[in-house]
Image 1 (cartoon, rainbow, N blue to C red):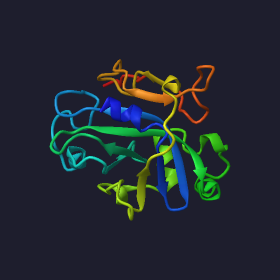
Image 2: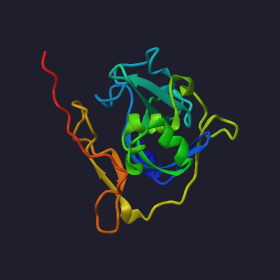
Image 3: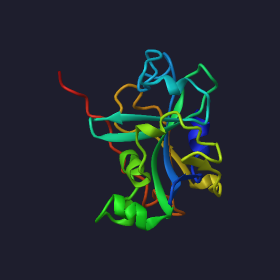
Image 4: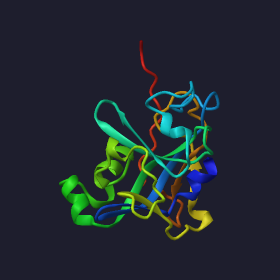
Amino acid sequence: MDRAAAGLLGCQLVAGPVTLRLTETEAYAGVGADPASHAHRGRTARNTVMFGPPGHAYVYFTYGMHWCLNVVCGPPDTASAVLLRAGEVVAGLPAARGRRPGVPDRDLARGPARLTRALAVDRAANGVDLLAEDAPLRLVPGTPPDPSAVQAGPRVGVTGGADTTWRYWLATPDGRAEPTVSRYRPAVPRRR
C-alpha cells in the first residue's frame, strides 16, 4: 500500500468539471498493522469500504466539518487505503475557485479537506468505483513523475505510527515540495 501511495502521485482525479493532478498522498494499513488506520481495530460501519475491493473511494467525515477521500488499495478483506492529501487543479479552475472563493490557486486543493471541497466530494462518493469510466468521481492515469521528484516522510497529524514514512509528495528540481503540497505538521497529543 505504500507503493500504491507513491504510485498515485501524478495521477488525475476527475469530478465533474474539475480535474486535479495528485501531488501528495499518505498510506494506511489495516487490522492490527497500523495504529493510525481507521481499520486498526477491525471492520466497522464507518470503515467497511476499506476492506475492498481495491480502486474504490473511502470517504469519511472528520473533526465534525471536513470530508477526506481515500483510495482503497488492498485485496478484498484486507483493509488498506491511501489518503489523497493534495493536488493541483489542472482543469475546471473556475468551478474550483467558486467552491473556495478568495483562496489562492495553489491552495485550492492543498490538504485533504481542501481537496474534497475543490472537487465537491462528500459522503455520496463513499464506495464509488474510481476506475469505472462512468463514475462521478474517477481516478485516471496521468504523467508519471520522475522518480527523483518523489519524496517520502512521516505522516501528518497522527500519534500512533507517526514515524512511519508513508507520506509521499512531489518535489521541484531543487528538492522543495511542489507549491500545492501541504505543510508537514506533526501530531499534537490530546490531553485527557
